[in-house]
Length: 255
Ligand code: PGA
Image (cartoon, rainbow, N blue to C red):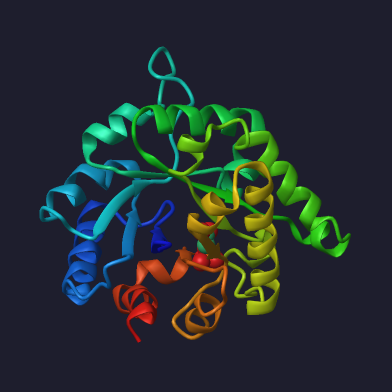
């Protein structure tokens, strides 16, 4: 059975005390009421990871993720953070290829391929983000863009490696804009992604793959989005900074 995941991406928000408080509120509201195949991931800024990890109990269905990591194992890269540091700080997921990293930090598919390799080597699960810009959607090239992002950054992985990925379809025009993809638009792309994975790997692997939707997802639209056949949860930005909104989105799977 496919895993349902709701992941919160805090981006560059919240100082340490505010981050700890939000995380404690989220744990409290979830109150161990998650379904068996459901997982929650919270991705705070790097400096909060180890403190948040200490609040988790053994066998928690809540995990900690990072928002990025460097593509090398270690070395003279002042200011950077490696996958092994994240692992040893208590993270189990890493967001790779978020559109803000692609746009503001010039991350291309080549470097993202290396990041996926280093994350997997360190036994972390990548949440690999793909999605088109508004111009690309208006030009009707969104399927080509998504296929190329998959091919260039991820399709070099072996079956066993690819199985560990979570994919996130995040149309860039929907991120932080309040413009959500309609459930039909999102479903169409999710089904396309699954078909490409089936072609490259196998129908079985594609069927087990968790594909999240991200982009202005909130407690009002989550149920309809997550109700689509190929949408297995969400990567939540703005709404993950409010404990009640985030947990309301998570509990869509319980209703
Ligand atoms: P948003 O962000 O929910 O604020 O649109 C989503 C994301 O960037 O992952």
